Image (cartoon, rainbow, N blue to C red):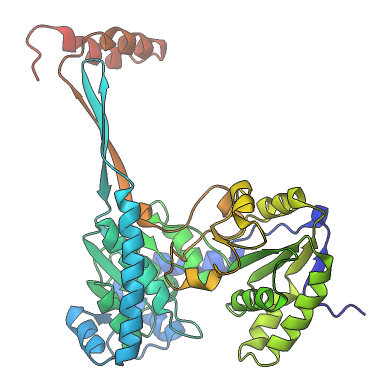
Length: 422
């Protein structure tokens, strides 16, 4: 009987990991919650919070800067230090991203055109708190929004304790909505109990994801994301213990997480299996990790071409390259939310603020989108400044008439008439 933790699959049979983590029933129910909160306001939001979040009537659900600051003042010094260092690293990277974009001016016939990079005005940043509160996710969203230049930052997280309140203070949030789930996404999007936000960002469970789908279009959202993913590529140079540790670190997130080992070294498979069993025996989250491993896989490839094919087909959220020449492979793989280049560059470092953001596309969306970044909170606004319409008038008028839009043509041509000024 096959007792392997990771199911072996051939290159040609790599699974299709396209998924949102949201079933149709959840989408329907979440959309109803969003509509009810939009129409019913704070009372409806709190009814859902009492039902789903364990919120108790009469207890606070909205926290201002003073409340967050009190929590920060009472936080253990070591915890505060690590959160502040992490926030600093996230902010530094996000500011560098923002600086990589600049305003633009180019000459055009009769004047100039260009674009301005402007931040979104108000961001709603969701931080999940399922089995454990996740201060890292709060920092990843709120700190990045601030670094991008967002004026107002509202954080939402269910049943916040002192740790999450203190983290919100470190992130320089203006308000914290102590409500979770679909009801909090509706509140952020439509201004229920908090100012209406222009974007809702941050990871969450299937209810949060479904609610983000429901509000998209009325507000911006960062992405639709499902359960977390990791593909580890390893060759004969990789250590089995390290590969197993990386797989388990991702698998313990969620029973629905997807992990895969892609290797050119058949011998490594058995070694990694033994290491997985050994490390699971002492892992507090072993039950969750085992459930995730059960629908993961291992793919043995003939050569680097096969490896690239498999990785691009999976288009994973995280891609760990534990190979002899990781830079070569990183240059060839096109589809990954974030790439961790070399055995020392563990994916868990990315989870906690070393480098880019940990809010990343899943379900093969890395084929067409990237992770949350300073760019998520920015808009490109174009502009045109003509001192004289000049030679472009004829072309514009001609094209307008080709399309049957006579008023367009006349609006262009009237710029050539006497009396038209700047």
